Image (cartoon, rainbow, N blue to C red; front, side):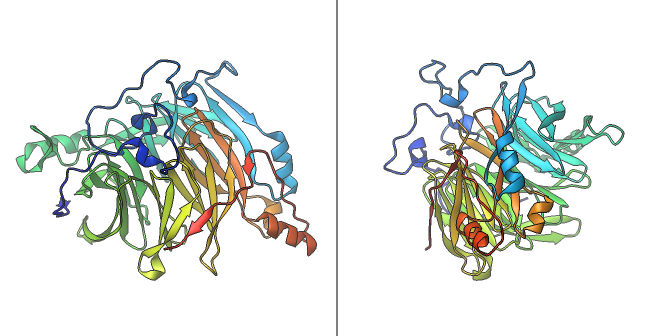
Length: 462
């Protein structure tokens, strides 16, 4: 187990929700940090309870009328589907509306969509219809990662649960393990040297997270699983046998994000306002992670991290609504800031030359990066959620007409605290490019749905 030596005081200042906003924006009423599922400060071990008065309840938590007998209702935007078949369409394709809890996590695998919430259920969707589901013993499902046939879910109780679909009946999922395993916990508890102090007058074995898991991420070769937690640590698990190889105390406050990339580097973001770089080395059958450098140190919390598919850019979202990025080719120097949100950035996803940022302001900004110039432009702002956008996943749209048109399009899934999952189609072709192609005989046309904002964000460079 490795702990970074840091001479700075571990008593971080309490960061109020006002830090999520730009100074000119008044804070919304009664937003619960635990509900946003991010730790903005470890100032208190006791979660803040929201006032249950109807006047103080956030708008995304208001009860909705039942749409069907099922707790889920699927809505397909048929007009948008027709547009997508003929035009370079960007906008809402459909919605999955949920009535029993907020959506905190989602992941895609092939034609399946997995959604996690605070209702103990993980739902599986296929073609916007409920395909399957399975239930855990804990509440909030905060992270979902899929590795081949294995499905890892991270939970509020600090445990990682491992699931697998039946080969005979893919709609049946069974839990095949929990990380750490019971055997590993018993074996570790025998040796007193395996205990670490987790709170005042409380010790626990180092292979266990003693606070909520905030993020899961696979290594580039898919052999290692990283789990980030509010207990200030990142733990490293071997996927093949679920063994905990290492525990690293990476920050002075809760860890909100972890992502691997750049050939053996691991990046962590925390409520202490920093983004750190760690270098992984394989030692025998285990691993050792060494502190490399600090990329960012600020007053507001770092809430999300993402690496682009070509492993050349690292993006970091913060509670002040900004997205910072760093460039690998320039030795991880700071490349600039993407400014498009009024409230905290809660999630990030990348695909092709694009990066998607979901925010507490209920919008999703879609940014595209010009490979030649390296400049970022806000391609569109997706509007449709009535609550904070908590999680994102993006996959390629495999459409023959898109291939023939030599343009790329993506399907983005967004989960929100408004209890819905929305499905968006996003084209890499901008309106200007489409008009130019039309003049040149390309025949492309951009539709302008109401859910799409035509405003452009600003990318500043520093």
